Structures are given as C-alpha cells and as structure tokens.
Length: 434
Picture 1: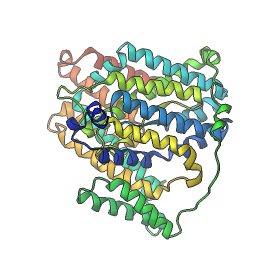
Picture 2 (picture 1 turned 180 degrees about the horizontal axis):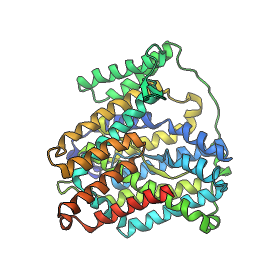
Picture 3 (picture 1 turned 60 degrees about the vertical axis):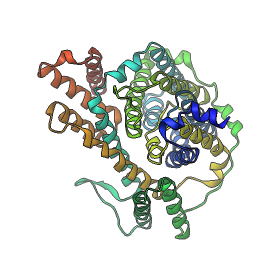
Picture 4 (picture 1 turned 90 degrees about the vertical axis):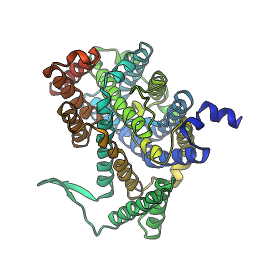
C-alpha cells in the first residue's frame, strides 16, 4: 500500500520522502492557520454567525487542500481568500447593502463559471498565454509581497505619513521576538535543516511564551453551528442584474490571483515542465473551482490557492501529500483551534519573510539585459507588493509585455491569447476606475 501511494504521488521522480512531505504540510498549515481566525472575524461583520463561519472555513480549507493534493498531486493548500473576503464583507454586503445570503449566491455562481471555464479549457489557455519569461518575475514579486506582509505583521516596519512605511519600534518585545525568529530560521536554513521553517515558528512561539508575550484565550466551538450558514445562499437573488458586477469581480480577481499563485509556487518548486507548461493544470483548476462551490454552500467567501503554500515548498514539499497533510490539519483544527488560540504574528512572520527571500532568488533567471523582458518583469516584481495585489502586478507585466511585442514588430511570435489577456487587464483597470 505504501509503495503504491509513493508511485501515485511520484516520490521517486520528485526525490522526496514521507517525512519531508509531512513536515512541509505542517509548515504550510502553521503559516496559513491565521485564516481560521481572520476569515470568520471579517465575514461575521456581515451578520453571519461567527461559529458557523469558523466551521465553514476549516471544512472548506480541508476539502480544497485534500482534493488538490489527491487529484492534482501538487503541494498547493487552499482556504477562503484574503482580499476576496474583505470585498465580500465591506464592498458587497456593507457597501452595496446586499444580504450575505445573496453574496454567497454570487460566490457559488462564480465557482460554477470557473468549472465551466475549466472544462472548456479556457483557464488552461489563459495560463499558457502568460510568457514564460514572466514566471520568475511573478514568483519574485509574490516573494516581495509576502515578505512585506511578514515585516508589517511583525512590526518591523510600520505605516508612516511622511514616507509611507518606516522602521518600527526596535524595543518592542514582539519585534525583538520576530527578529529572533528570523535569525533562528536563517541559521537553520544555513545548515540545510529541512524543518527550519517549522522549528523557527515553534521555537519563536516557545520563547514568546517564556517572555509572557502570548495570551491564551480558550473557547469552545460546536461544529454543528455550520447549520446557520450551510445552504443559506440565495442563487436567485444573485442572478439579478445588480449582482453581475459582484460575480465579475469574484471571478476576475480569483482567476488572476490564483494564476499568479500557481505560477509562483510551481516555479519555486521546480514543477514547471521544460516546455514551460504546468502539468495536470485542468485538475488543479477543477480542485480550486470545486472548493469555491463547496465553500459557498457551506457559508464562506471564495476559496483559492494560498501563496503560503510556498513555505511548505521551501521546506521540501513537492507532491500532493503536502497539501493533504495541510488539509487534515485544518480538519483537526476545527476541534483544536478554539482551545489553542491563534498563532502569534511574531512567530509566523519570520517564516513569511524568509520564504519571500527564497522566492525572490528566481529573479536571477530573468533576462535583465533584454528590455523587452526586463521592463515587464520589473513592473511585475514591483507592482505586486506595492499595490498589495498579485492580479495587479500580473496585469502590469502582461500589458507591458504585449505592448513591447507589438511595438518591436514581434506580435506574431506570441499566441493571440496573450493580447486577449492584455485587453482583459486593461478592461479591469477601466472597470475599477468607473
């Protein structure tokens, strides 16, 4: 049985082991476990019961991650997406006055459309249209993005009215703990310890406990609370003309955020084929779309691939076992998380910062001496973190790449889908402006 599983997940091909994959899965879970607490907090502002959304978050993350690992055999973990949950709450429900049941209906419809686009091969063609020269730029841009998130969450950098951001309080206990976590993890990485990320997070948390910087607030959670949101979606209301804009945004943002994450993680893991294609892409998108449909039925916003999966990749994860382990831990968290409490940001931030450093390393493969490649790559790299949007960074890269191909008389060398993508991105900016 064990050898059969190893053949199915291609352990020999990826030169991995059960120990490495399990550690990678735990590492991914630890770095994205915050979603268990953050997603319900955001969505509960719509009037959705907190306990129900917490249960839905854990179950959908478990379902999506396990399906991704078992079906597509990729170390990609899924959960309700940050940004999309904020759009769901603050723009759709609170801003437009749309009932949360109708908003869930819009999420359901966007998931169904995703499935149809996947079966029709459209999503796969969109990914294939992204120039392979930009793959490393997307990965590097997302690396800067998650490093920036880690620096902000740890308090190492803080907002500044004069300079946008500035150095935080270096005397703060949590900042010092985060710096300790960075140093500990970096040293472990220098010694090539595969569990360096996980040890760094847990070691920093232990020091935080000893220093009195962790505050335990145990609570209880009844998994049956999901009945308050499960199957409460209003699809008929979402089909109203007023909801078309909402469905479009859910569809568009998730589509290109997901593509950016997919390219970045597979690039970092070395899972992209020699012809610059991503194997089993249809299965990846099927798992992603199915998780969104199930999420809307359970009672949460759009489910998508998480860039924190790159922390598991950095820990050595190369197969779907990594995602399956992460999914199992999300299911277990349904019963354990309320008792344990949220992982402190000073413990998880160092992992994000150092994963970002590893992902930026791929920028060395960019042809910096060729302006047609260097300029779009640079725009992608810089715009992802500065706009706080993977989709926006990818937009700038695609549009500039297409424009330069046309301007230099090389338009016919690229697939027509590239120019369709550029047009869609331009339409996105026009839509956002209006």
